[in-house]
Image 1 (cartoon, one colour):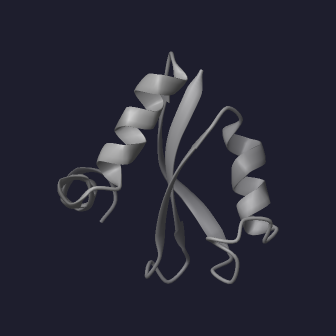
Image 2 (image 1 turned 180 degrees about the horizontal axis):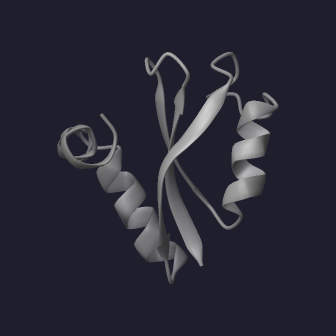
Length: 80
């Protein structure tokens, strides 16, 4: 399984969308400051994730969530 996930900082001023094979390990890496994109926003909390059977399907959905309409969808339905 491949996971698309959304993490947010405690102030809810920062959202990050990512893709991983190991959700627990990846969130821990974000909180340890091992990701350049999220370094400085700790602590981060996993707010939403979805499992996909293939990497290509997960990557397509991740790209959608990073698009303008995907950000609006996320705000309305996944993470307020």
